[in-house]
Length: 117
Image (cartoon, rainbow, N blue to C red; front, side, top):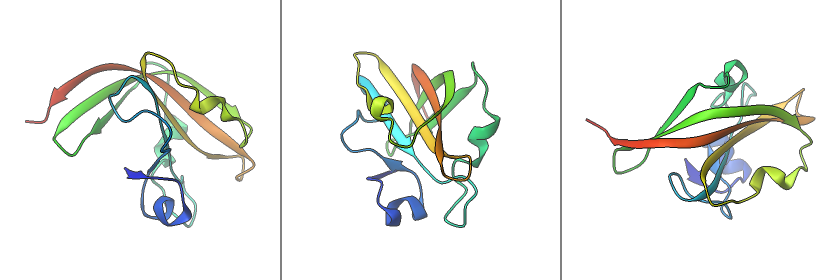
């Protein structure tokens, strides 16, 4: 996961929207990535995700942050509500949908953190 959402970042991996919470922090951590385009397939598996599934992100210190999927939806690409911050530890993932005209959004709540063995 890299900071920012510039083309250079998203062509190389997953981008973190800078004004949102960090991974495992209070607030809404928002990450975006390509899903099957010529620029990358990082978020291609999102299309098969279900409510209740777990998403795990391992940070640079080896701490695994585990989130549970609570909602999926399709939104307008200009819908800034995906960046809304609250007090809870949340994760929002989004990627292109419908040939790039919309965005597929996955919302999650934080469950726990465990050290990598």
